[in-house]
Length: 364
Ligand SMILES: *Cc1c(COP(=O)(O)O)cnc(C)c1O
Image 1: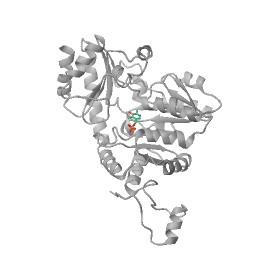
Image 2: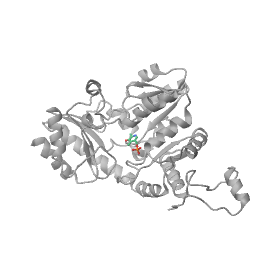
Image 3: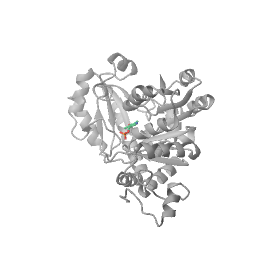
């Protein structure tokens, strides 16, 4: 762990060569750092990417992609079902600098194609989506991007490379909030952007050097430890989620379960082509609206009440009053985020304990 802000040179000539970029090596930890570089190398290997640039958080990764690759007058086509801060970033911040966004339904490639304009430079999505676990056809959307001369960026937070490798399916850029499953234990913030070296390395590193949202070496070290257990965690958490999804689906108080690993999911076949399992997040709708949903949340003793996800501890949230609380109720309902909907991110506790926890509120 190199908790080092700056590096000492052997000579004035070496300092000059490092600053000029004529000699490889470390200069200053806003540029890069050996521990951060180790994280970048290993995540690139996991995603099958030529290049990885680490960032201070997932949002810093998304900012780096947009600020590094876009300019005023450019246009983004983005999924309507994105992380709330990403929607705010595109609508409120990028719009102030002349970058506009058209929002389209995640699952309809023809809507993406129809939204493309001559100045479209970026297509942006998350799959599966939050909280309804809708699945994008990455290969089909990579064709839309290619035809438009634009880049397809996939926020691979929910699956991680343990379950899904978007670059292999035709995406150009993969984005991570390392805060979630890559760390896996809710300890630190981090992020990363991955893709082709000639496309990303120069613009993203120039952006990070000058904008300063570098990953801290301590956080990189924590996330490196997380990567060592990523595959087994994702497999075990996915298996537990499938078991809970099946149980919830047969529960008389549950109207609907959204989980790509269930055959009842409308895109189950596509999900199983793209992902090696359904992942560790599901949502379900209980009878009785907000009151019944809050009763389930409040009866939890093992499951933590938080909107965070990607931890080995299970978490539950009521999207309509938290993550989607600022969305107009009519828009929310139309999108399927009903008052009875709950999102569960499943951790590594015993499935029996989780079932008992949810059952207490459902049956009570
Ligand atoms: C959490 C999250 C982000 C933002 O990541 P931070 O590390 O919190 O900045 C982006 N996308 C998705 C899908 C997320 O869940």
